[in-house]
Picture 1 (cartoon, rainbow, N blue to C red):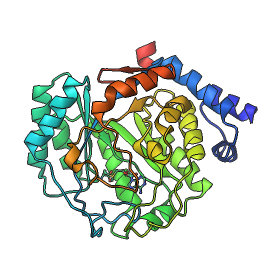
Picture 2: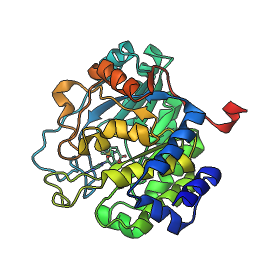
Picture 3: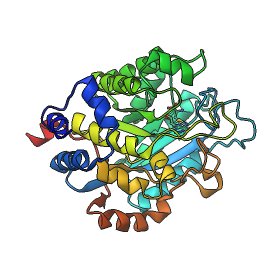
Picture 4: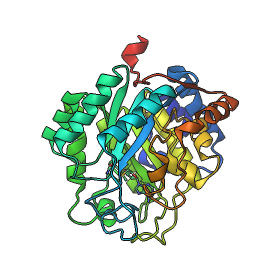
Length: 344
Ligand code: SAM
């Protein structure tokens, strides 16, 4: 396997069969070492932090895997208003956060005008901060309006690039074509775009994961978020098996080698399946953490899956110590993506 790791390190690519073998690797020391070396070349020991504000758990969609899907009956729904969102940002700013990620289900109660107003207000109060959105599939005109209001980044996982697999995870009202259309529109408008997928979602094959990597090579996103699928009570997939920690870590390392400059979060779902998951993600090649800034009163209601680890920004000092314990450093800055141009 050493030859394949070397090839991925040198060229940033490998054949489909080689990629599948790496995903299944049991002893990942060599792969991890290569990924860490590549990550240190471009980002040193810096770990960027983003404050996550989950501002609404209402959703019009019915993704089979998701705990806040529209059909989820026993869930108390909430929405945060503009002033609550702004106070989350103010609190985060005091803690040193310089990027705010506004995430929600697909909730049509927030008009484009209202969202633009919120984005504009955050940017006016904190011009040195970046605003990222993660609010799902919208029209190109809406994406343009948010961009004009000051949003610079957008996170939209493609979830799975395989049409066969996509159809097993979503109702027929949703399509991979529209998901991809959104991603291309976002890129074309000028956003720093984040995409990604779940690892071990039901019916996923290794070939599906290869399609995911190939799609990311086409898209060339600035950020790539992956995490294990975790079953959520009350959903059609409640009794399915969770994705594996080992495969997720292998894929993080592979992504670091294939997309050396990308911003790769060590995700909440990774932390939710293993107590050490967040640090293991950093040690596999990830370089971003996303502490939660949502008010404590609603944090448990954004229940995408069971036993979600709601890691709060107020615990940032402890986190900083943990991160420095493994040789990295949490840095307070916007944490923009780097490119080869920056290093020439
Ligand atoms: N509505 C927006 C969207 O569709 O992009 C953002 C919110 S959505 C709930 C955020 C992400 O949560 C999804 O992209 C999905 O990958 C992840 N997610 C949802 N249910 C999950 C589960 N059961 N296990 C792991 N991740 C899950």
